[in-house]
Amino acid sequence: MSPEELLARAAEARGLARAPYSGYAVGAAVLSADGRVFTGANVENAAYGESLCAERNAAGSAVSAGALPITACAVVAGRTGSPPRGVWPCGACRQFLFELGGGGLLVYTLADDGSVASARLADLLPFPFGRDQLE
Image 1 (cartoon, rainbow, N blue to C red):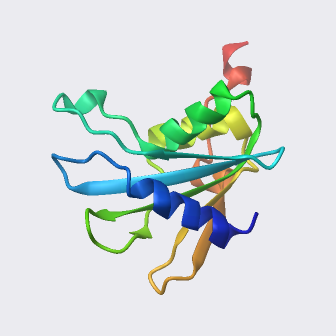
Image 2 (image 1 turned 90 degrees about the vertical axis):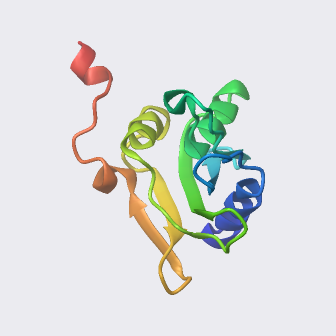
């Protein structure tokens, strides 16, 4: 699946976001090594700490389907009702994705000019906490 197709799936998922407090809708799509795509949207809660990020929702769906490892993640965001914009995963999502796909996982978003921007997860999370630190 191309980065553009994965970003389109993230944009579709963004339409399902529940963001009544911030008005900031996020959509994500993750690609598993076997070619399946799983999407997620952010879900806000009045108790802000209980809100869920789109990336972790999408990745959790992949886990539930037994579709690991994850090889790519696309993320878009923006004010509800506005066109999607680029955004990189937050720190918690970067750590979560590292656990499920490793440093080689590719992350895609939109650049300011609408083109595809990409980075390896290892570049976004240069000092991850993983299994090695637990031994």
